[in-house]
Amino acid sequence: MNPVLDQIKFMSKIVGLGRVLSMRKKHAEGLKYVRGYVATTCFWSLLNNGLLDEIREKGSVEIKDFAERRGLALGALGSICEYLDGIKVIRYMHGRCSLVPGGKTLLEEPRGLFDLLYGYEPVLREIENLLKREKTYGKDVWRRGDAVARGSGELGRQFPFLAVRELVFSNGFRRVLDIGCGDLEFLFLLCERPDIACFGIDNDARALECAQRRLKQSDLRDRITVTLGDMFEVEDVATRFRGIDAITAIDVFHEYLLAGPDKVIDLLSAFRRHFPEAHLVVAEFFKLPHKWLRRIPTVTLEHHLLHALTNQVILPIGEWIEVFEKSGYRIVEKKLIHAIGHGYFVLK
Image (cartoon, rainbow, N blue to C red; front, side, top):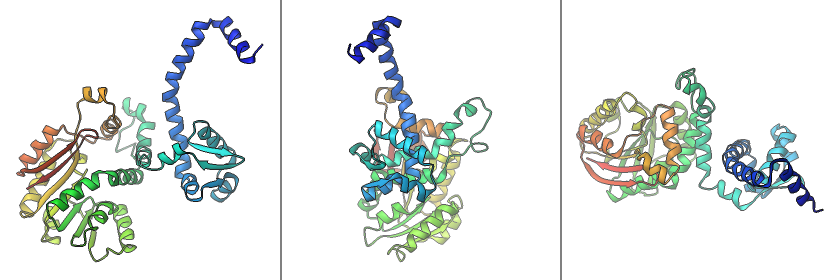
């Protein structure tokens, strides 16, 4: 008898053919979620240890040599490669790894999603303890800030940074102060126009160190100035940066809304007083209705969850407009991208 038919006959005898088919269908449904978790974890392990980037650079890599060079466990590495080969993310044959089209795609635009999620992995790992109030975010649990910054930068380059740059260019702003400047990727994009001068402040010393290192290696040292600074010390910021046409803030303000909007309203009011001639160009996430996301479950679902778990408040668009108006600004220009729940505003 055909071995496959023999197996089906035996299983049918034990539980019945209908039950076999029903279980197979249900397990396939569950496997989608289980495999997503396992595949992401394995992908992270190869991404964070540099194997995937080396494969992309060289075409293929012999994993025994790679394991020796990186001090990795060959058995574990081989098992991970076999698994990712099985789900067609990489090709693993005769001890060598190479990328298949699916794997190449994951290392392009989606890479930012993997890096961003890795930044929040400690939060997801502790989600049950957070739920039971046995641990508290910001005290016992922290996201990985470097991975969040890296993922946000990769995703920002794909659209948000370009959208804010377009608002700067189209409004003719030439001297731009960016608050929360991070690794300077946005300011580098602005400086593609030779008549623009940029200034950046950030309150994260590690981010500033990264920014200064990148700036030192670039040819934009004469057009970009970065410094450590607290955006809430607006009078000091205004003293240091004069003649500013526009202040840009990309996904900065929502991190200060946990106790309500007053802190951000007061900050924006201070910007308006101390920079009376400057426009404010803001990019911020806005909360989409759950019924909308249930109908079209975009990555915004994950975004809302991760921000809620880490005490970051995403306001509905109407409440953002109230914040701007209460601070004394009027909206000169507004662009809303509902697919990602992101809004772009020019305020004066």
